[in-house]
Image (cartoon, rainbow, N blue to C red):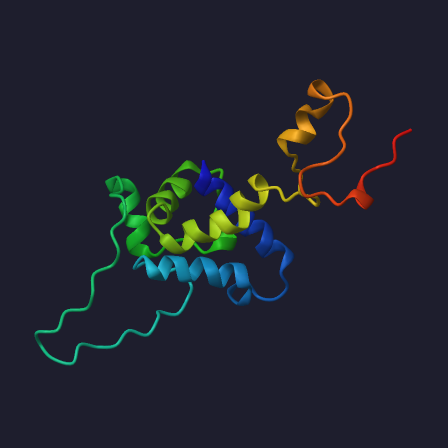
Length: 159
């Protein structure tokens, strides 16, 4: 699935990065995605949230995510696994993270720009183009003297 490819790519980047896991750019990005979806990553300090200023003020709700089966919902309550402990071959891990990240605009945008677009949008070093004359001139005309407006001194010499 796309989420498995996203996580595999992110874990590959994490393994290549030096430092403690919590300080690696890939782990920070993963934590930001989870926090943006209203989840806590296990072992990470809780993000600072501004307390309500009045009794009637309610904090904004977390973005919607797919409902999880009851046996997996407890994982979310305890906190989501950190990137370095996430096992993408475990179907439970993948199902929980899929339910969260499939609606995350941050994760989808990163996946498209870092994984999908580079793999599918190949850039050619040369621009390939041709006109109708280039494509059919040899079939229609035995010789070509030039186009209208071509100065006489630019015409090729006849052999």
